[in-house]
Amino acid sequence: MATDRLGDMRLFVEAANLGSLSAAGRKLGLSPAAASARLLKLERDLATRLFDRTTRQLRVTPEGLLYLEHCRIALQAIDDGEAALHARKQTVRGKVRLSATSDFGRNRLRGWLEEFCALYPEVSFSLYLTDAMSNLLQEEIDLAIRFSMPQDSALAARKLAPDARVLCASPDYLRQHGTPRHPSELKGHHFALWATSAGTQNEMDFTRGAERHTHIAPLDEAWDSNDGALVREWALKGHCIALKSLWDIIEDLNAGRLQVLLPDWKSRPTAIHALFQRSRYMPPRVRVLLDFLAERCQHALSEFPPGLLP
Image (cartoon, rainbow, N blue to C red):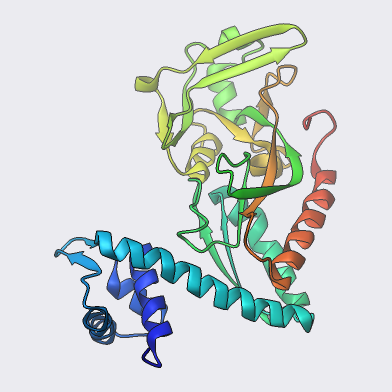
């Protein structure tokens, strides 16, 4: 095996993950020409075409998919071995790759990571903000912070704190359109909705004791986005009502920029979870960060008025 084969394998895996050879090269500190030359050399050495290339797309061939699976296993084994050595030394160092929802990442996680780095200056971060569920394996994510439990059995979850989704609107919106007192009074109001790969979340279920009520916001009349931060911004600007996580809007509630609607009616309770690969070795930097985030979440619960969280 060539002495730089591991580097070539990392380039191949990154190109497959990112769908771009030039982007993979930039991530690894290679020029586009150098990245292309290394991939061509790897294909010659293997006597196999790993990608089908077009001007717009880089698609892994069937043979490439087979090699990709083994490359990921080999590289992960090396990374885990190095992490295990650091663990023996109790060294908290290296890069942690995180994924978080847009609002939580900007409003909470960003500041907490800065605090963590002050305690552990040898740790660095890659933070990916997206409201979609990340593929932790393909994107090489160490931790994903989400408000739901994983459907993938290969993922484990640690609950960090309780949460609830509430209807909220700005004082300006309520002055113009009135304040609904019952879910049946939501009809005719304007909504900002969160759009996911599973569809736009326009069905809202509420309970008050034994009472049940469902409101379905008409999609053709609503504003919607796959970016939860934008949904919150629309509500702040008085355009509409939004159904948001309390963690995303608690500062707005405490500052009076938003108000909770129908406080006696509850939606399905949720919680903040840290998701990680069940079978993957957790290096000290990730384990210590996970404990740190759990402590910060519990401390932040003091900001919530009584009765809002389940």
